Image (cartoon, rainbow over all chains, first blue to last red):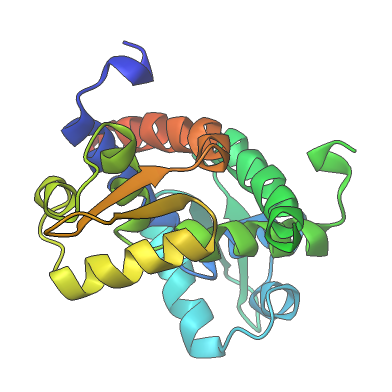
Amino acid sequence: MHVDDLPIEQKIKYVQDTLFVISGKWKLPILIAISQGSNRFRDIQRQVLPITTRVLTKELRDLEQNKLVIRTVYDTSPVLVTYDVSAYCKSLKPLVDEMILWGKNHRKKLIE
Amino acid sequence: MHVDDLPIEQKIKYVQDTLFVISGKWKLPILIAISQGSNRFRDIQRQVLPITTRVLTKELRDLEQNKLVIRTVYDTSPVLVTYDVSAYCKSLKPLVDEMILWGKNHRKKLIE
């Protein structure tokens, strides 16, 4: 079924579901940072400034619950914890690419 | 320039700009409702439940400032106010379609 054929109530519901997962200032930036090679907490935090430790902890937990991030704990001393994007997370790429393009253009638009 | 070639800091900035405009529970649902023919305040409100009058007023103002919604006041008695999506608003369609598809699929994914 094509998107345009969905009833409006369904469209709104699915968009709200998506927004619920990716909304807010941090989730997508965190996913971008991880997917580009920041795999440890402090590296992610450095890339996504000025996020606080408390907020980043919460956001990573939410992303893990939504199956977008995989947290791995290595039994080393000291314990090593890494974050990776899941294979499923890659399904967000078309959406994120659209957001990058739109944000790039919107800046110009507001100056017009 | 292709999206993938942008530096990560730029990507994050553009995504944050886009999120700033469309984030939250209501803005896209409001735009969808208007674009599907709800052009008056009460009609929009009915379609985007349970939004309050106060929040809808604020959201419509934000959307107008971002050039996505056009508010027209007709000099009738009583005064008639209509809301339309701008031509520019249509630039959000690829993004919104991606969000509908993603939200539709995500529901299944979480049950897996």
